Length: 219
View 1 (cartoon, rainbow, N blue to C red):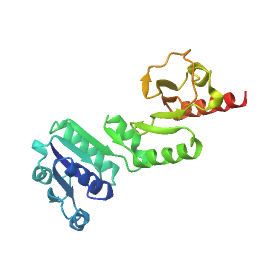
View 2: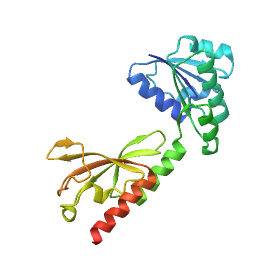
View 3: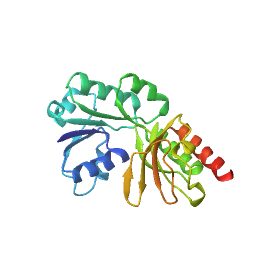
View 4: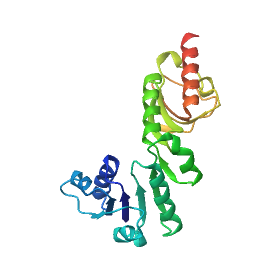
């Protein structure tokens, strides 16, 4: 798979290292030659110096034959334009855009770009760890708008049902694992000590589950 990375900063370098280990054919573009010095010594991809909005630079990077492109600079306007060009002019199917400033996120979303916002996701993840230490996150979709959480049923919840724990708004039970066997939960399914329950939820839904758990523990 041939992939172009635009931006040889911290994100671009980490991404390049990961993709190289996965066997991708890489080109990385940056207008600051010194930025390439931070790549791993064993990096084997093509280094392309120049402004990413320059057509010749993009062609030297192989955009006309690329399978994917990551716009990973710290400039949201540049990332948005590069992604738009890659999709509309060169018809690249797999495009991911880095959102550097959360204030630009609505602009990226209006272009319908596949988006990764490390600032928004990182702040939300820290918030979850502060407020939901007893409800573990195991998977994050998008930029964390919906996540899959895991809880282990304690002794004092034994006999309660799925519908006792999940309020039904902003969260959905996904599975229950008991003695190593996973099942799809029914609303009236009785819980046992040690059951591992996975559920998908928004941030608000996860808080509602936590509040429900607190009520169960007090009753």
